[in-house]
Length: 202
Image (cartoon, rainbow, N blue to C red; front, side, top):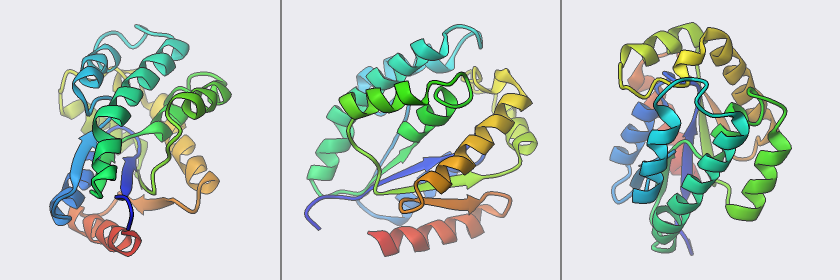
């Protein structure tokens, strides 16, 4: 293997993807666990602008620009150096989230997202796990965390349902790298499935 493996986790808020990303990192010694928005000092500063505050704080277009700026810094400072060092990088969210959140559910902006991604990021994951679950359950979980980062959860159940469909569509669009995971099971059962797929790819 000349370079490392880049694995991402996607899904609606409260789906359990962050837990599964952490468990996979623990099961793969030497791997790097990171997240979006964030994952580098500059991107973490932008994260606060995106996930806190009023749901109407930013337009979808502004969000796309902010996410792309954060992702570029994350790529430069964290992801690419780790891959060059032949490490496995596991990221809680990446560009697929922007494709769904801003590109598909907050306006017909997918072309804008893809154009910016091609120009400024130019990198897709090697493997993506999409953790799928009932939006009502996921929303309840997400809001129960009371993390202070509830801006997208505060957009309501209808928004979460559109997000879920967006991620299901994405799994069909990129079948070679996307694996749909049933999140309506025990944490241990989900983690076992994910580890099996990841080990086969790595």
